[in-house]
Image (cartoon, rainbow, N blue to C red):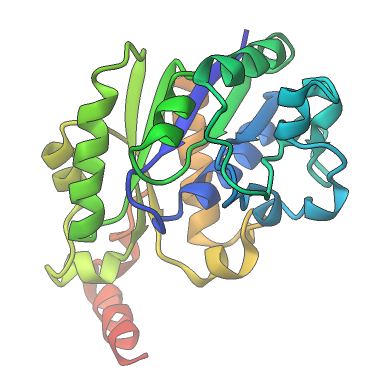
Length: 261
């Protein structure tokens, strides 16, 4: 049976969907069978990030209405034999859909996958609860911005009311040069602040903005996501250190260059 993990954030715009997409890519590269389910009705973007928006025939609304089965609505990611997307609907939000209805869909997919990654809508309203009700584990995505941390703290508090097996923290858009200059919080400080286990750190990098879920192998983000996938899949492994290349004499030069750009 699949591990069902909801990726949430509280605040919108922190890169939650990009984290979901890249985590799915890297878990599948480890040999795991992965399906990513977009439950952000009306504001769906997972299909765009994955580059499969033109391959969609059915979406989750068709499954819910009985026009097709869940397996028929799956879209295979290009060049990824173990990676699929269950797209959301781009129409108005489906407020009448219950968490139980979504849970039945996800349970029907669970036997044929190792992971079900649930891309949760932003906020803590009905869409959030609908998504979390389908999961057994959660990943909270936050950035070092104070507004994101406040919303992440609220999200962690609400998640405690659910009987989840694990809740992990991914700190996204981290800049090592700002950390070394004491202008950004350390991920470990954020871990302590949110009282949630840190499982991944993703650096702020142009490659993420330009490539989405097709990261260059030499990029720092590629290394960071690979570490995150290993941490989730095997339960062990290192967490990406965004300050490493900014340490020492040559690191100080890199920090100076970064500030001047």
